[in-house]
Each structure stands twice: as structure tokens, then as C-alpha cells.
Length: 129
Image (cartoon, rainbow, N blue to C red):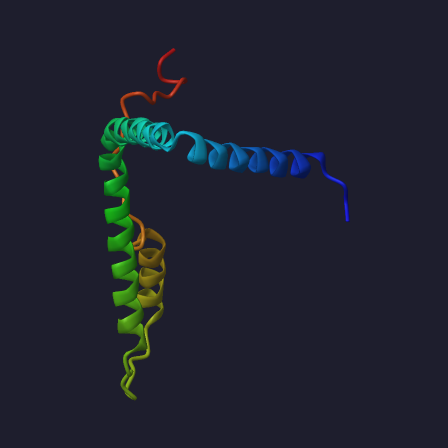
């Protein structure tokens, strides 16, 4: 087993904290509970401010999540339609029809969705000269 100073220091700090907690619990329990309540209130205020400030960014992320859900739904519908039982009768496609299908498949990307973003900040450096 490898000798690690960081582990020893970590366990030493935890042990000292536990000893301090128990001594303050027996010496002055009212002060201990007061400190715990004040600490919890400070952490609660910090978390509240953090969520209020970061709440503005949720709307941009919500559009992305909605697009992902729609994309997954479309893929699931496409999988269902492909797994349906095919008829024993089929049409032999002509060469012109095969070319048209190949061109159409290259252009179609139904699993992707364009999400409008901030495009004013981007500029092509070759156009602005």
C-alpha cells in the first residue's frame, strides 16, 4: 500500500473537527446550534443567489433540450415506420428514380434541427476587410 500524506492530513482534519464538535456540544450546546443555524442560513442565501443569477441561462438551454426531445421523437417514429411489416409486393425502381432518391437522401437530415442563436457577434473576417 502506498503511503499518502494527503490521506493522513484529510483524516487528521476530520478527526479534529469531530473532537471539536463533541467538545462544543458538551460545553456550550446553544452556541453550537446557533452556529449551525447561521451556517445553514448563509449557505442557503448563497445557493438562492446562485440559482437566481443562473436562472437566466436556463431559457437558452431549454430550447436545446426541446430540440433534443423532438429529435429523439422523430427518430423513434422513423424506427417504428421502418420496422413495420413490409408487403411481399415491391416495385422495381428505375435508374432515374434511384438517382432522385440518392440526391434526396443527401439533402435530408430530419434528425437535425437548427436552433437560432446569437449570430450578430459572428462575422466572416474576409467580408469585413
